[in-house]
Image (cartoon, rainbow, N blue to C red; front, top):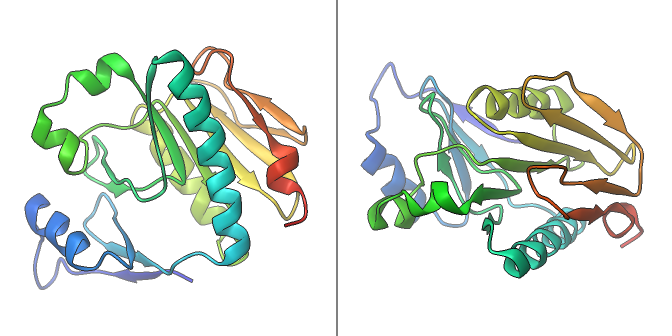
Length: 192
């Protein structure tokens, strides 16, 4: 279970202070909501960690072959336009958007919302919390997002300007956002 700390009545962290806090506590996954709350998440368990790496590996393998953009793992935080700092389980940014960032922006928490995000539901994750997070990504510029739930073996597909679609396929397409990418869900949903 994650813990949410509301610091604003006492103090408000600058972007630099939040970055330094995260660097000083590398064993924790820390996000910040648009209203300044700190969300501290525990490390994942073995099954979720294995699923995460399988998703990130497939995304990176596709991304390396075409050089259309840059893939990221779950340890990358992005500064969204609404002020939140979020770390999707896997994500991807178009090359032109990445290249427009300064070296400093690339080194710290990139100030943009990924074009593509994946959230993988673990045993302790609230579905409603993850759905809200997916909506936040979409409202901040994500073009395609997948909320993967191994327990129900389904995926909620979020697309810019469209309603959520729920599928139970063993493979899902990156559509026009990730042309030619297909995530093999058999590896994700299979027994570990």
